[in-house]
Length: 220
Image 1 (cartoon, rainbow, N blue to C red):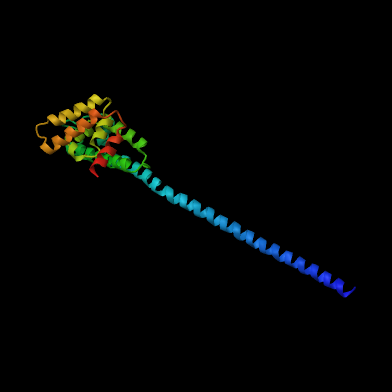
Image 2 (cartoon, rainbow, N blue to C red):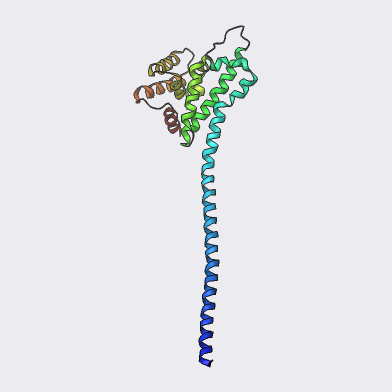
């Protein structure tokens, strides 16, 4: 075999070697590309989980705020009828009046916190908690009495809770009017109640939570 033939064979072998090296490099590159894609996919999933964390936290908070008192009722079952069954406290009951009032205060404070979070954070599941609040307000004289007797303690959420406890707009206006006519209401509270009455009378019917949103926006 001549020298030129060997040169041709060597050239072909060199070309083949270059092709094999290129294929090897491409294989390594392809594996690196797939690894990078997997890392990107993992990062995207982690980002999605991180983005959902606030929503999950708010959902958990909503559940806690609207059911936290249940544990206390389990420890004090004699209080349950006043908040689930429409029972009205009377002298001689197993529960004392102070116990009923303290439980009413705790429940309403939890409800107020839940409503304020609903107004501040769109992710907060208001559609679940408003049904819970409505259920208890309409079945508990203790809650209704504490709300109207201490309405000034719920400056952001009072009107919302009045709306949730009432079946008609007339009931809300009647509650506000009774509070306005109370002999012990001071000038500052009378002014606030008048503003609330005007807001309720002049505004179109709206979702109850919107009153909390409106009040919080005005106070900022």
